[in-house]
Image (tube, rainbow, N blue to C red; front, side):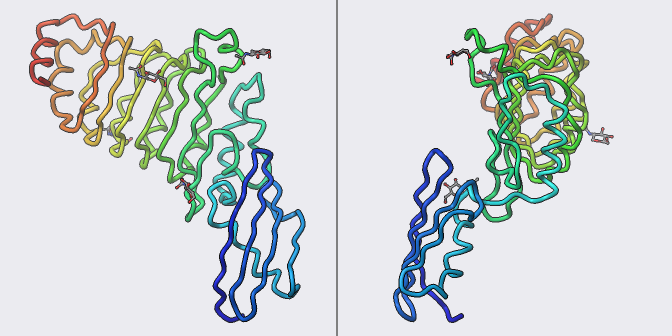
Amino acid sequence: MSTVKSIFVLIGFHTGLIISLGFNQTPEPTACVLLILQQDVVGLTLAFQDLSRVDLCFGIHNGNAQLVDCLDSDREALIDFKEGLKDPENRLSSWRGNNCCQGEGISCDNKTRDVIAIDLHNPFPSSDPNYSRYALGGKISPSLIKLNYLRHLDLSLNGFSGIPIPEFFQSLEKLQYLNLADAGFGGKIPPNLGNISALQYFNASNNCLTVDNLEWMTSLTSLKYLALNGVDLSSSGSEWVGALNRLSHLTELHLQFCDLIDSNSFLNFVNHLL
Ligand SMILES: *[C@@H]1O[C@H](CO)[C@@H](O)[C@H](O)[C@H]1NC(C)=O
Ligand SMILES: *[C@@H]1O[C@H](CO)[C@@H](O)[C@H](O)[C@H]1NC(C)=O
Ligand SMILES: *[C@@H]1O[C@H](CO)[C@@H](O)[C@H](O)[C@H]1NC(C)=O
Ligand SMILES: *[C@@H]1O[C@H](CO)[C@@H](O)[C@H](O)[C@H]1NC(C)=O
C-alpha cells in the first residue's frame, strides 16, 4: 500500500454511534463511510468506487479518546476494583466489554491507552434526596495499583462506611489529584501517603479522619491544594505549622474545624502565608 493522504471526519452521537467520513487522495480519490458502534467496527462499511480500499478506513479510530481500546491489564484491574464496590444504582454498568476507556468516569491516554483518570464522585450533591442511593461503598481493591499511570482519582461524595483510606494508595506513584472528600472514610490518614510525591491536589475533607502529625506531608513536595476540613489534628500540637510551612508550592489550604488547639501557631501560619 503506498502512502495515502487521508482526511477523516469523525461525527459522534450520544448513543455511541460514530460516523466517520473519509476521503483518500491517492492514487485515485476514494471516499468511505464507517459506522462504528460501541467502539468496535461492527457497523456498515461503505466504500465508494473502490472496495479494495476499505481497509484504509480502519484504524482511524485511534485519533479519538472515546475510541481507544484499553489495555487488558488495566481492564482486569478495573473489573477487580468494581467487584469490591457496592453500587446500588448500578452507576458502573458501563464498565463492561473490551473497552474500559469508555466506562463511566474513566479516561485513558489517547496514545498509550493507559487508564489515567477515575472520577467516581457522586453525581448528586449531598442535599439531593438521591445522594445516598447513588453513593458507592464497599471495599477498595488493591488492584487499583496495577493502573500504573493513574493521575487522577476522585472518590468524593460517596459512602465507604468508616473504612480507612487504603495504605496501598502510596503506590499510585503518578497520582497528581486525590479527592476523598465526604466519602465516609475513617481512622488515621496513612502517613505513607507521603510517598505520592507527584500529588498536587489532596482533599480529605469531611470524613471522620485523624492524624498523629503531618510530618509525612513534607515529602509531598508538589502539593498545591490541601483540604483537611474536619480532620482531627489535635494530636499534632503545633507541629503541623512547621510541616505545612515546608510545602513551598502550596497555594490553597482548607483547615476548618480541625481541633487546632494551638491557635497562636495558626495565626503565625496565616502571617507566614500573607
Ligand atoms: C484525546 O484526544 C481528544 C481529541 O483530540 C481530546 O479532546 C482529548 O482531550 C484527549 N484526551 C486525553 C485524555 O488526552
Ligand atoms: C431521583 O430519583 C428519582 C427516582 O429514580 C427520579 O425520578 C428523580 O428524577 C431523581 N432526581 C434527580 C434530581 O435526578
Ligand atoms: C514510603 O514507603 C516506605 C515503604 O513502605 C516507607 O518506609 C516510608 O516511610 C514511606 N515514606 C513516606 C514519606 O511515607
Ligand atoms: C473537596 O472536594 C469536595 C468534593 O469534590 C468539594 O465539594 C470541596 O469544595 C473540596 N474542597 C474542600 C475544602 O472541601
